[in-house]
Amino acid sequence: MNCVALLLCCNWAILLSSTVQGYENLALKKKAWQSNLDDFYYNGSDLVYLGAHLAVDGRKENLALNGRQCARSSTGQTAEWRVDLQRIFSIQSIFIQYMTDNRVWGLGNVYYSSFLGFSVYISNTTNKEDGVLCFRDTKYSGVTIPNPVNITCPHHGRYVIYYNNRTHKPYPDGYSAFVWTALCEVEVYGCSTPGYYGENCSIPCPQNCRQRRCHITEGTCLGYRCATGYRGIMCNDECPSGFYGHDCKESCSTHCIVSGTCDRVTGQCIGGCKAGWKESKCDTMCSDGTFGKNCTEQCGECLGKETCDHVNGTCVLGCNTGYQGTTCTEGGQS
Image 1 (spheres, rainbow, N blue to C red):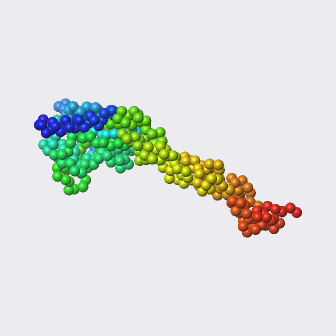
Image 2: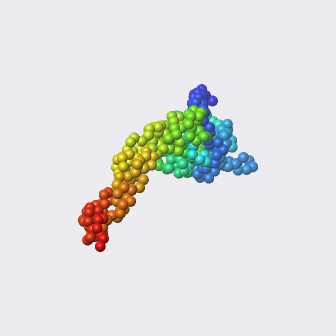
Image 3: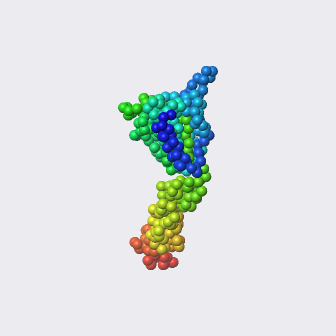
């Protein structure tokens, strides 16, 4: 190995050791899948298939096709590989060791051209488009593309997806005309215990983060998603008076008995509703024929069976024959 290559490897080793410290490889021995057929080689007596699982077997000492430590699919216009972490984890970084055939990495290596242009996603489904794009190569060349590569991507997800394609000509200089997976190891580092963050995953996420999910290094609630009734990057600010719900975006009803005052979580009016309104949020007018506090009063004999005012029971058009008063409840006796 020449001095430049050795220096590059050492620099990457330093970067990796500092990046993954305190985090667990969540992908080790997990179920993996790759598009296209598994590639294979003939060992003199048998066909040896290079299945997707070889990229999460924990081995990356032999980076050759026949080393039995690397996954590789058959060639195509697209190549996709993914690992199922089996549940949603808090992820910090993703390490990828691409196949080298145990040769010095760079322009003289046959594999660099099929690595160029790759992208990595974290998703809660097997569809990469449902997830977040962690990285897409748009600037590397055969001289500059590193191998291995470490991608910092602090997100929550169940699937980590590697993708590459050659579907839109012309391709940039150095790109192969086809792609395959050729992944010797993919390591996904993060916290194995939900609800924690920090270098050693030892600090509890703020209790008001929604689903107790927070940024793996900073502890901020992801996407500022707070439990109902709270807001702020750490979700420790209660909704101000007059507001409630997710991110405190809902306004308390003006029909609460104390206008605009309600429970910050549910929106339920504290003390009940003003006359003419009902339900816990006081957002529903009394049904026809009823009025007053809690809508428990019955309308009187309004003219033509018209309904009364939902607040005070007044018959706007007057009373049926034989009745009188603003609510048409007086009279009616023979």
